[in-house]
Image (cartoon, rainbow, N blue to C red; front, side, top):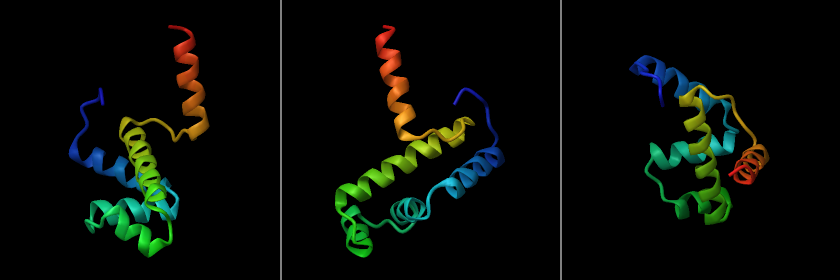
Length: 90
């Protein structure tokens, strides 16, 4: 984050980022961060595999990082294309 954000702005951006997450992803993120549940516990409760829970959590972290930076949400395939293009120009 290159900007010097105040606490209020950081909270606003995080809340906005959380609201943009799909419901299941948001619930998984909050279960891990607020309820301190393990991936296995969440997998058991949701019927997902542990790997799927890990993937949802990782994607939520990326989305929140972008929200804090003030960047619009970017789909996974656009991220991949951007990285491929960056490597071709090196």
